[in-house]
Structure formats: structure tokens, C-alpha cells
Length: 70
Image (cartoon, rainbow, N blue to C red; front, side, top):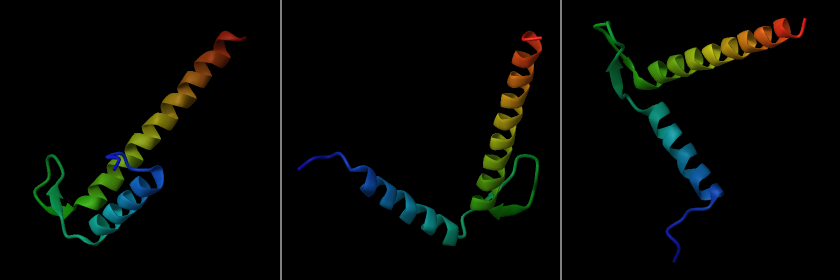
């Protein structure tokens, strides 16, 4: 028996875990705040900020490349 899981099995486990987290009441405080929020909300906000930052970095890199081609 192999200890490695197939991609489909891993995806199934990830989806099941995401569903459990979505339904859970895990709470945390954001740095510098006193009130508790659902962990999933904090993580989603963080993911959006990282995604936005990555997009803006990509745009600025493209702008620098375009400038050097003039």
C-alpha cells in the first residue's frame, strides 16, 4: 500500500477541510485589534491583499519593462 495520495484524493481532502473550516467557529484577533473574528474571514482578507499586491507588482514590473523599450 502506497503512502502517497493521488491528486484527486488530495483535492477531496482539501475540499472537505475547506468546508469544515467554513462551517466552524474558529476565531482569532487581527493584529492590533481587540475583537475576535471568524478565522476564515481574516484568512480570506489576507489572501485578497496578497493577490492585489502581487497584481500591482506585476503591473509595475511591466511598466518598467515598457519604459526601457522606448
